Length: 302
Image 1 (tube, rainbow, N blue to C red):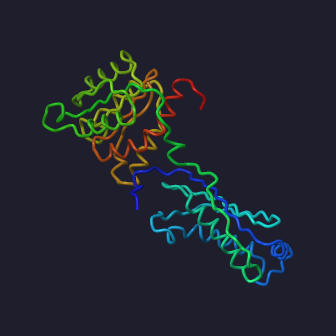
Image 2: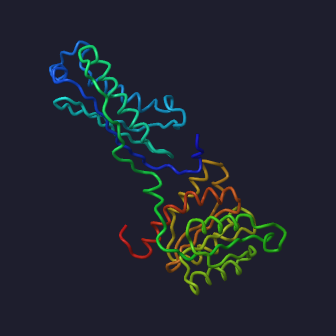
Image 3: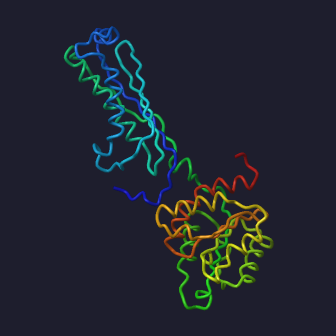
């Protein structure tokens, strides 16, 4: 089973279709409601809903998903019944397997209830019609190569007493994602040093993105949020809320991060925590939506 703990939750939807071919006489019995075992369509609908909810118990590598909706529709044709299933869930993984399982079981249920009167029954193809809410929707390819700087704020790292693991983690991740790294540096927790670096990045070099790491906690020298907020022209509280909420699901200490986020000119500045683990988690949450954010900053349609 794949580790999906680093993913963020989104509304996931999927639609699948199955079919069952049968004789005209059997279709007539179903339309008339005179099939010996009763009307198969309501039973197949219940079976499909149950199958969607039990998919992880049937297919070993499927993650358990708390489905929020299962819709089942049937179209009775001359010699075929089409089963269409829609599934929705707010989850970290897709629900296409739930939709496919439900559509398959719906067709099988009708097969079971009609087999005693029809030797010509034949299961048709089961196919995924649509899916939304995954990586292709929320993590599209990065347009262009936004210019970015990484600023580590730490007295100990600036003095050479501690290796800057978090800053290097951010630079490596950004380069893998397609950003253009313009600068990486380490400064102390001194307010003047932090401010000078941020003003250089935003006002002089006019970079697209500045990510800081460190100095966001409760320590007496944790000055990064105060300096950042003093320079921002437009705040981005949604970024602050979302990253902390994402981290809070993984460690209760996320609530202690005071990081700020917002725009100075067209430069987006985001404060990340100093912990390497927290940095990795925050980036998982932050980077996919930012790709859309850069298009908004450039004036594109929302």
